[in-house]
Length: 270
Image (cartoon, rainbow, N blue to C red; front, side, top):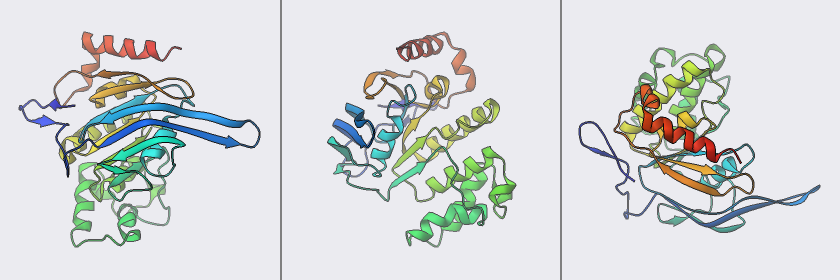
């Protein structure tokens, strides 16, 4: 998958390392065994390939297994059947080149913004001489340069989520996993953060896997929008999103994009 910027350069596609895709899922399934209801077939089978530096978004009904799929990609959950491959290697646990932003901010209240951002590097013993400079640069980009010494309780929800996003980007991940990161925010703040996320992606060129309940958000941000069925979650369809980057919010008023949004929403009505 490849998108093109207005200056003619390409975004998405390409390769990293040996030149393969970022993610490959082959006949992937997940079942849970619970005490009351026995086995729950949560996910799959799913076959999926995500290109390196591609931005994909997944939409689907609540309980369809979207977060389970993301946790498998994060190496936090093992599939019951099938295979997950990340940058050419079987995915058997958390990878150091993966960044994750969950719905909650998960910031430590007793640490400043800067210390929260640097925490994963300290825990992994990966602090480098330029780590603080990179942290301050990213915090400047997301508009938090003046808040490096503040604590989470002094920040709005949107500011806390921007802090969590910077924390996930600190180690320059090859794969960024986002689980409904802006779902709890008001519409205006969400729009601003969608523009910000697009700008960061254009600069960092990491592979992004986004879960969202917002069809508009998925279409605005992604190269491809993937629609999942109700449990057990399967890929119903995949839709390419046309248009050059960077995108503006008025893209959603374009007749072709509006038709795409109607098409995706119709697939969710089952």
